[in-house]
Length: 360
Image (cartoon, rainbow, N blue to C red; front, side, top):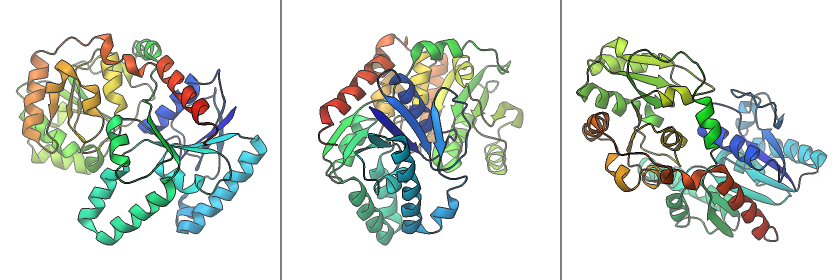
């Protein structure tokens, strides 16, 4: 079977990495092709057949629905040339393009759209109703895959899918451990790590406030995926943090050595799908402290690790859990990551396609 996986671009997000991992995990079963809406690339993937529909999708975005339709015509032409059997949309943005395609399709729900709807509901009733209508139009009576069980539950409160199943992102655990041994410019001092950029998206304001409250005033904070910027510098000043305690690193194609050598990984988000960085940290035996946002972390930090889940938007509680984790942390054993192994996920994905191929 020839499958086209459609994503926005190869930017440095977790969704992109998860799509790449799924393609690689199933490469011996399916003839996979990766199609980008725009030609922006942070990852080097010579082993994957990759195509771009445009240099920058902004020109299409200006035309709203018409722009989506015009991009879909380019996509349909490419799919016909490649003789594709199945199309998989991996992001909500790509779903707006893929909906026009006259081929069997699956929508991979990598975020919980209900969280976005709840935020819109608080801000604007008009925008909330408009977006809800759009999502119903996109996903009602369609074949969906979610990346967390909580996301599946939440989506079914809004959408009536034809088929829906949770399939976790695949992780090549041995490769992650090997890549973690690569020599990179690891900070010489002990450090806590946070991965991903965006004060609003990743709530780096809460992270920095919590960091300012922890007892160890020598340990540093590595912001991997964040370039030095005015907003962060203002927060450092606001919370009276010594600037030399914050380490900025805008991007690392291989983040694993930084994770492996960290004393602790912290996630401070209000919203997540299923955070890759938590799974990767557990694979590398690096302790994790996270906010207990609506989907994701509580499916990962289970049993003894669940006490390191912190209330969302609570810097005080986050700092308390960071302090506890730096003093002692339970043993991180293989059972915590067993269900994310690429072999298990590959079986589930192939089974989903085979089981539902007559419905797709």
